[in-house]
Length: 426
Ligand SMILES: Cc1cc2nc3c(=O)[nH]c(=O)nc-3n(C[C@H](O)[C@H](O)[C@H](O)COP(=O)(O)OP(=O)(O)OC[C@H]3O[C@@H](n4cnc5c(N)ncnc54)[C@H](O)[C@@H]3O)c2cc1C
Image 1: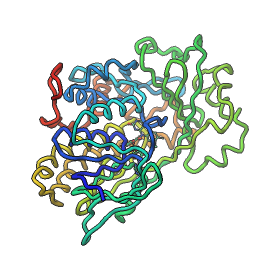
Image 2 (image 1 turned 60 degrees about the vertical axis):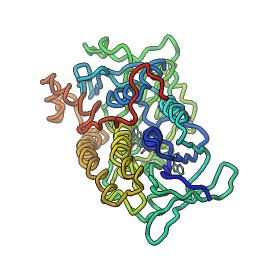
Image 3 (image 1 turned 90 degrees about the vertical axis):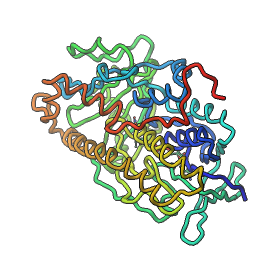
Image 4 (image 1 turned 60 degrees about the horizontal axis):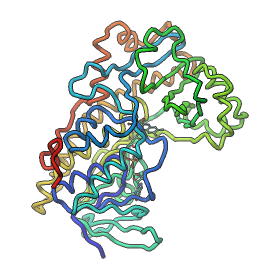
């Protein structure tokens, strides 16, 4: 049987960042990821200013900057014919005043490369955790199936469940999230853009030229809601449907969806006809909830495994990363000393719980708006009060930009993980 100090299940944002940070503390860490690569679409492709600052601290800023990415400086929503700037990142403190729109696999590959340089780091791809090892009520590692289908066990002083919202590890530990109502599920589809085609964003919007790069458009109107990211050669598009309505709506011809997207985004048939069939439209069921207690002896849940985030606002990845930073900073000492206790695990939860709860609260209020949009009762000339305030008071958009981009409790990078710019790692 293999042995490590920390077993991290899940090579998503939380798990990969945690693996890198713990390895930089000199702690032996093994990350298990069930997929063979990070090439999964629709996983949240925005890298927030707080993460960009973190990458600088980790000495990875220059490599990240080599990736081609558009910068998103403001987030706007259009309700009927009324445009509201929901968040403005241009005046937030720090070097990075934008969201970098980078496919998540590029980000995770960068973290994986940096972690591979650490002698105490191991990443095992195509390795799926299937259960927990326990001794006297304490989690002592995991059982897994490896890339050849062979079962195995990995003993660990501490196991982290970073395996996402359906977290098999959390389930194996008998931990249940409390789920909240959500009004929607999401259809994800790529809509190819002919090179000559542009997202006709203006509809008379004076801000249209202000954001040349990194364009994300949220549109609400006529009982519909959708968000699209302009990726140059295609639009990565999320179309919101009522919770549980997937099967019923798919009885329509796919032209039904093409017509709706065309009307919302002013796309002509040359664009919408690139949706060939329903097979290209992926359903992502939205769940939203959290654990009351994130830990058991020998086990800590982080990211979506601890608190499943709604996609609204695009904040789940950032929260997962911040969880990882806090956990590494607070637990590196006890892990090195071999003294990790339930109190140490509880400290991580206490540190991260209230920023997460505040974000979930704000997502709940955004769900109310989506509910009203899908019911056809959200109108541009009768905006909800928060949107009216955002239109009237520009400084508020910087506040929302800060809260979205940096977060309510930014986590300091642990000293053991820092690299000064230009300095070799070892
Ligand atoms: C439709 C939708 C759209 C979203 N859009 C955004 C967005 O634009 N921006 C944003 O910030 N957030 C978005 N979110 C939320 C975001 O996806 C999550 O909050 C974030 O991915 C959580 O990161 P994580 O590392 O905790 O988990 P995940 O990203 O879910 O990573 C978990 C990892 O664990 C692996 N895994 C699972 N089970 C096992 C196992 N048994 N063994 C080994 N590995 C395993 C998975 O393969 C995966 O790589 C969206 C969510 C949804 C549902």
